[in-house]
Length: 329
Image (cartoon, rainbow, N blue to C red; front, side, top):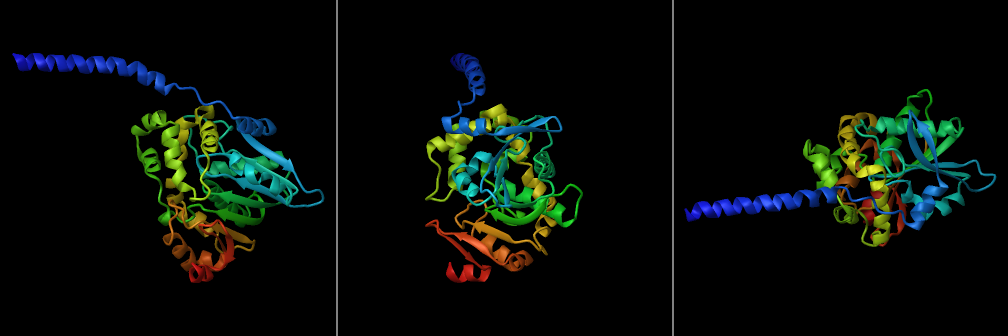
């Protein structure tokens, strides 16, 4: 009898805990996004939007050096936005006549439809549409990409090589710390859970908060270049804009796409006639050293691309061939 009363009281206690937890969880899941910092608000205010198939895409377009014909298009990484480039924006305007960046669909201030089949192919088409919108479809374009943007750049390069209608005419390409080889890419644990979580993914995306985001993203940066807390809040504000945290699992399908279309995108880097440069920080935990550099050096791409920019732990940039890289490491 005593045991039965004890079990009854335990059940009643758990019911009470559950009744209390439900409204608390409901309130937690509907926390409004953080307000934009003055710097991020200024970035948004100085940008523009264009429409792609009924979807609003945010972009920045600055006129720089007068008389220069050079145009550079910047392709940002996951899970952030074009705001990644703000620290070097002014410097780029001193080198290029036009400096252009966009927030990919599902990122930053661009629309984040759901449900939606996000794909690298669509993101590449959005870049092409932006340049048509700006009247630059027939101009030679320099591409500077990072992380997720590297794959978009590879698809644009593939279309360029295939002489596809409406393609970008690429003058040069600079890739930086992206998983151009799927076999050496090491996604973070949270990324693995979100991309393959099935029914669990929608729950995880709703439970994600600034603490989880910052703890997951910070180790990706080098020890001397980690973002400040205010910069992390800016990144998080961009993700939370338009409930972007709820589409992260859909966006992460790019990892599966990269494996499926490896031959297409890795092959695009071979037998190219344009200058290609790669900037690689060997402390990258997602594309770890030495696996990444060994595969790069021994592949036809390493032989053809010829040089790799190495960002050392002291943040010095060196230009050297893959063999020189290994001799000097």
